[in-house]
Structure formats: structure tokens, C-alpha cells
Length: 116
Length: 113
Image (cartoon, rainbow over all chains, first blue to last red; front, side, top):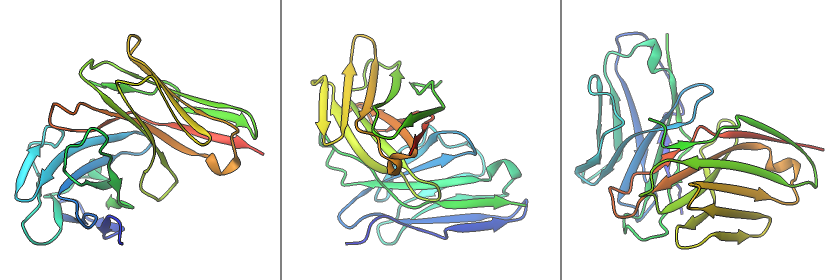
């Protein structure tokens, strides 16, 4: 029973290139969250999605960043025209989406993005 | 706007003693709280949680206490073990809202052998 799968584990991009981060949720989970962790900082909420729908994107920068969770396939976090400040660990988490009162998130191992 | 705060960036404790990690929140709508543990180069893993209808939840060596009037929760680990050395994040959400989980900045715990 695979957990949350993120790939790649490490991604190196030059300034101005595009970064695509992928996340496959746990089996049976329909909700996906993306978080960013800058060096020596906490986990910053970016976006919360369910299949084909963005529920909350209040933490995502308005420019250059986008996220999707299509009906088929993984969730994608896309960063266009990357800058050095985008260098961070990006974590994906999933939940069953039942909105039960004790629902918790399951995290992937993260993608470390380095912008040269 | 940091709605969940962990004011101690680091904590060192002797093996066998109690570790107490603290967390404060500002949003009174939060009704479900969680603690996660994170090792380097890994994703956070769930440790323990508590609903706002309770003031204490215990699981083995881990106990979480919630003080709603003070908007404060704490995680107690007793006895502390070297394998507990990690970064601990508290998180909060409100189940009547969008179910977004807000995390604190983390506390790095070092358990000394």
C-alpha cells in the first residue's frame, strides 16, 4: 500500500526555466495539499485541491505558480520562470477527503528544488 | 500572518527526561490540532492529534494537552529517547472551513544520550 509519492526527489533548474513537481496521493485519497519549506522555516501552505478542482489557493503566489489535480494522473505543481528565491523543499500531502473530524494528512518525501 | 506559532526553535533534553514542546494559535475557529515529526530529507509523519472537545490525548509516550482559553497546546514526550531527535511541527485546522491545515515553524528537539 504505497504512500504519497513525489517525484523527482531533487530538481535543479536554471533561472527562467520551468519546474514541474509531481505528486501521486495515497490510494483512496482524493484531496491533495502542497506546502513549501524554505531553509530554516516552517511548512507554508500553498494550495489545496481535489480532483479537477482547486479548493483553496490562498497560499500560492499569484504569478508564476499554478497547480492542478486532473481526473487521471498525479497532481502537478508548476513554477514558471523560476528565480533563486523559489529554491525550497516542496511537500505534497494527501487526505481521504471525507472531511471527518479526525482526518489527518499523509506527506510525501518532498521535492528539493534548487535554482542556479 | 502566522496563525500557528512555535516560539522555541530548538530544545535539548537528556535521555529519559520529559520533553515539552509548545504551540500557540491565534484563530479561535481552529478545532482540530495535530503534531507531526520530521527527520532530515524526509516528509513529516503524523504523531498525535486532539480535537477541541478534549483537553488531553495520550498515545504511549506522547501526550498532547490543549488549553482553549489560552489558545495553547503542548506535546509531552516521556521518557525522551535519542530516536525522538527531530523537528516537531504543530498544525491546526477548522473542520467547518476549507479544511486547510496551518503549520507552525517547528521546534528542533535534540535528545542527548
